[in-house]
Image: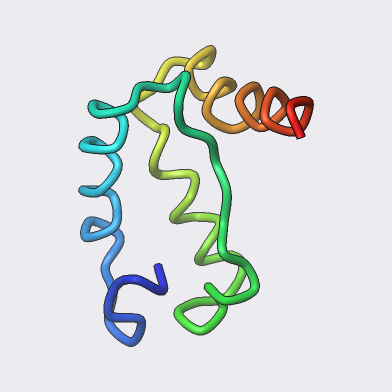
Length: 79
């Protein structure tokens, strides 16, 4: 959210960025992360978390698990 207008960003503005990333790279090549605590400039933790939970709503349970957990675990094993 800090890449948007951090004083007046709207959730839909951020969500529109998700589809191109997902379509370009697929779930096997993206992982969930945050720029916390920098994102606190644009919103409190609850607002940031609410925003992050909107991204995968159209994904199945399995796809959401890949997005939030599986790829991060695989990344951590590689490092």
